[in-house]
Image 1 (cartoon, rainbow, N blue to C red):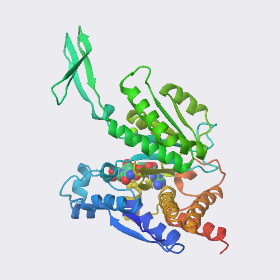
Image 2: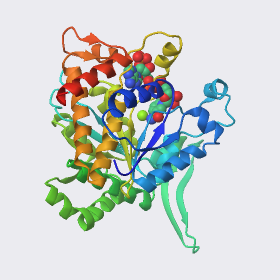
Image 3: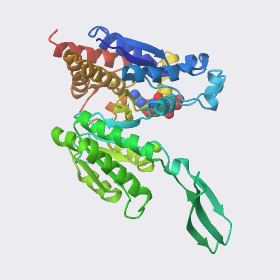
Length: 399
Ligand code: NAP
Ligand code: MG
């Protein structure tokens, strides 16, 4: 390695896995260079959460980060960790600084079958993470009366539109979004499609929402035509826009292998549908891509708190480390690509293959053993599973 990865350590069971992964699967094989940031809750509290901001700034400097799952504090965590403040979600802080979009994709393994028979390849969901119903203003309308939208321009100009002339009680809601945010979302999506050589789908309800949703459609189309069309054609991939209901119907009949860009609410709903239909949260990867092309890789799941408490009691755990390993391989491959180190890319690819082969050979953690179609799987504990992946990897390397 020539440039360090930004390494963001985390909490609970995933922090335990993090160290095992480094010891067994990375340090023996890679001359690993990282700039280490401890995002574990204790250190976030000790640094007044400065460490989170610093790790995001470092990601801007180096371009690629790998992150362990972290606790988002709630009332219970305030007492458990004796916190000075209910620190914000690190993912939220990092996403705000990098202005990025999160792409979530399942890891496909034979023997862990998708519930939708036609899905042979991963479907990656990109969720726009700003605005719409998540930043709405609502009002309960008690009885007859007029509701209007009023815009007062900084120059004093005014626009008005009637929402509804109520004759009885009802409800009303105001939503907004920003051209800047939609533009960043579009760039992240086009960049990631080129990066992974997958088609990009985008859908809204622009036939009904002729200004709001139509703006999303137009911004995507203009950016595509001006900056990405040639690159997409060269890469042999397509950008495809359709209505959201048509997209849903097509997704169900597709074989997968594309990126589905979703508005905020659609992404919230569809990402849960896609991840549960593909089998297991423990097999979902997640990458934050900024419009400038900075990348932060992680697992989609949390810190697996329940398993951690068992671990603390000295009980055996069988926690699946695959998504966390894929966070490392994603980051290492990207680093290899950016720094032109083919051997680093090759190692990342091989380690992924070793994970998949280990499971396909019937050796897996409990979460997968419960849903696999492979008969008589061997259920391994957290460490033995990682050790087994190492053996597969060494066999593949001919050691
Ligand atoms: P979680 O860590 O995703 O785990 C929920 C349940 O899913 C687990 O109890 C386990 O089920 C199963 N599971 C998830 N990952 C697994 C794995 N790798 N291997 C095996 N089983 C797995 O969610 P949580 O327990 O609700 O949240 C714990 C903490 O994570 C919270 O403090 C939350 O703030 C944080 N969180 C962080 C992130 C992030 O950093 N990106 C994301 C989500 C949540 P069983 O118990 O049935 O085995
Ligand atoms: Mg949700």
